[in-house]
Length: 168
Image 1 (cartoon, one colour):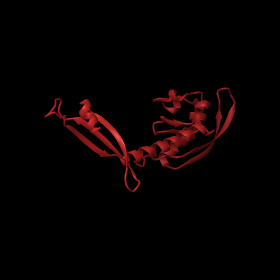
Image 2 (image 1 turned 120 degrees about the vertical axis):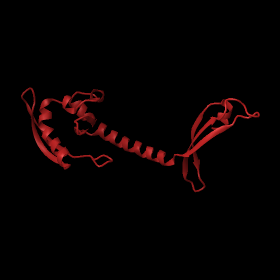
Image 3 (image 1 turned 180 degrees about the vertical axis):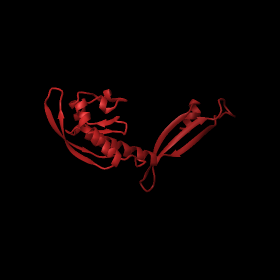
Image 4 (image 1 turned 180 degrees about the horizontal axis):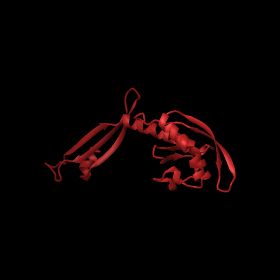
């Protein structure tokens, strides 16, 4: 990056992997840019910032792995699975959930789950969701749902809190 910055007279940014003698790989971020716009004694001085980003790279890879696991679960589970926040915004849902309620992932942007599922479902699970948010404890229930066409179905529901990094 240093030489390229001097030759092109433009900022050059590149992450290089360096293998240490002990076999450990380190990711090093180089930011190099010309110091002056014009030549100085036939040379183009370059200033460089060199940062070891190994920890960030490893954390990023771990996050990608976890996201892949969550994504695979949501795609493959046959169960209606969903995650909502305290304001009832749908954060994640399984493909089975989307198919069952005939909605798409694009339909959920900035929408409450209560606006996307039939009112009968909302009535059946609302109180249980409130219990989980208020107590922080899991709830299991069997709910009989009466559909608009007069038919009934029974759903076995398992709700539980998922705490974020701050413990909420």
